[in-house]
Structure formats: structure tokens, C-alpha cells
Image (cartoon, rainbow, N blue to C red; front, side, top):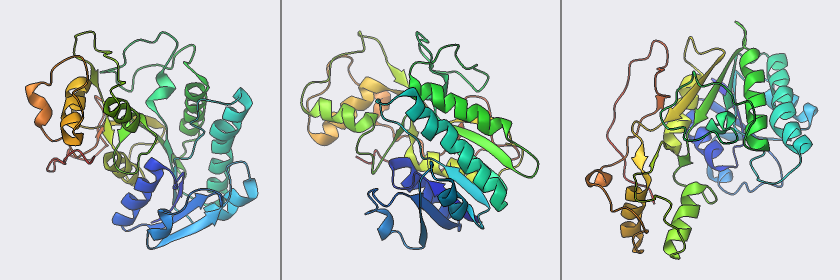
Length: 296
């Protein structure tokens, strides 16, 4: 299979490239020339296409001859106008889908986000599944535009052009330099992490980067996924303060304030993807593999 990966110079996108290569795919990446391409240039067998989601001509060139598109690029900054977010996250996705269809691609995997369901005063979202509706009012412009793009992608599903959206939860792992995990660790190392537990367990559903990337590869091949969205998460949620206590021990930092680590936090996190709370890839039995250590 020949695939196009957008956002490949970023954290998750680089792992999608790795997963596609492991699966035997021929990989082309859509990147901007000014992006940091130092890691991608060390990956053998990657073809570079230079362009931008706002440049239709570059998208058409990038999509030529591909069978599937993994669309991971997005505007994720906290800053920007509504038009900037819509141009990159919504109209950019529309342009890329149009280019992919025009080039004869058969599959479009949209890397969405649980943020698409985050609303103002939405409360906890642990344990929800894919039946959860979009909120009436989104939390921020990123959430709003990811939801709008996701709807467009799912509505574009056709027999000859399968579209699917993946919502990996709180992705973590190697090459993450600015996500939630590095920020938590940095605050913990400097002793500036406040106790947000209130003395109670704080559970979170995470997704190891390779699990999220493997899910993309499977979504590009699975039958029966068209027009559907899937949460992607590690097999079990974690208790955040217990996890941070383990990491503090690994890094030689002081234990974060709040709850003491539970007996379970020494277990290795699960290594395989699981799509949401209730759905499983159609026709695919659950797979198990040995756990992996925290790669910190």
C-alpha cells in the first residue's frame, strides 16, 4: 500500500510513519520546507512532498498515486483566530480529501481527537464511548474545528472512498517535547506541580504513541469502519498521581503532592490499542502482547 502521511514532522505523525513502514507500506510525507525535518531525514525509505494544507496544487501533487491518506496535521496551538483554525483544520481537511479523491485514493484516515467532544462545563469524560454526542458549545476553537472537520470526513464516506476518524486519547511517548506528559514531568521536577487530586483518585485514559500509530495502520485496512469514529486508548486507564509517583522515582524527583502511589502503579502499561470502550475493529479478534515499560 502506498500512503501519504500529513503532520509527519510532528510527534504522533512521526510514529504513524514508523508504523506504516513496519507494515510494509510505501510512505510519502507532506511537509513544509521550514519544518524541523531532522528526524524524518534519518528514516530510510520516506519520500518527501513539500506543500501546505492551504495550497491545493501541492496537495494534488502529494496525493498522486497513493492508496490511503493518514491526515495527522492540524493547528493545535492555543492561539489564533477562528478563521485561522477553520482554514487549517476544516478547509485544509476538505482540500486534502478532495485531492485524495481526485487522485483515486481509496481510504482516508482522519486523526481526530477526544477534544472534538469537549464542551463548556462538559465535566469528566472518563468511560464515555463513541455514542457520546458532540456538545452544543465547544470548549475552544481547536475542539470546535476538530469536530467540524471530523463531521465532514465521516459524511464523505463512500463505497469507493472509505473515511474513518480516530480519536487517540492523551497520546504520550518518545519524541513528545511539548505535550501534556513532558509538561507534567517538568513541573514535577521543579516542584511546581500543584496537588489537583483533592485527596481522591484521578483517573485518565491515555494512549501510547505506538498504539495510536498502529491503530492508523489497521484503520487503513479494516473492513466495516467507513463513516465511523473510534476512540483509541491503552487497555486500562491509569491513576494519574500514582503514575507520577512512579515517574518521580525514575527521574529522582520528589514525589508529587497528593495521593500515595497505589499497589498497581508498578505494572507495565498495556501495549495494544483498543478502540474506545465498546467498539472493536470489525472482523478483528482482540490481540494481546507483552507490556512495555514507561519509555521516559
